[in-house]
View 1 (cartoon, one colour):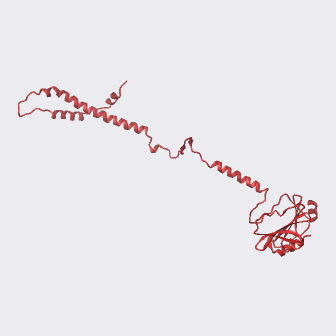
View 2 (view 1 turned 90 degrees about the vertical axis):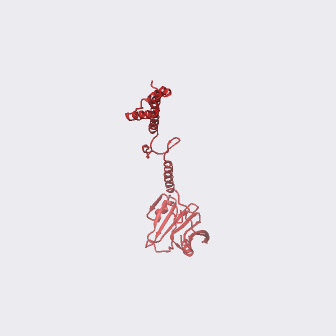
Length: 265
């Protein structure tokens, strides 16, 4: 098996020009003098042949050194990746491989919450809002007051004193137990919703946060008035085992609300 030295030596090549320079150097090193008869120099005669061999060896060693350096440089260039060969599109890697996007799960979770909220809103009233909100579930429209009474199972009262001139009222039974009558103004800008039910509690379905809330006595019953800026849009009360409420789109004064409540019969 060839040794590392032999492999390096096989790469060394002495050109004719190099050989000529070496020989000229050796010739110039001749120590004979011309002013005196030539005297045999035993030391020079003995070691002249070795000088040529030493000079040749120096040239060979220089060539070996150059070849060795070139070989190391080639080896480093082959084993070191260049910047140009790197793929800039490769994603950064972590301890466990390429880093995957982290927002997929968050997006999916958010979508699920929105859908859940939508479903919940279809079966619940909206609380804490500034705009009037009305709840209506399982509503069934009927043509006459008598049909409404037959549906809910009790005699339904009506509002006699409206704050506007209205059209033919609309009758609706909600859940089979709540009677609703809607009065609409002739110009379509006013509406009054009257509700009556045989259950206790506020049946208005309006959970708006009104700025002005007060309780007044009307016909001997406590009536809760709600509105803002001295205008009231909602009234609710309990009377003789029934729950009542009046809801208006446009607010009215306390006296106007009182007149409507007193006209319910």
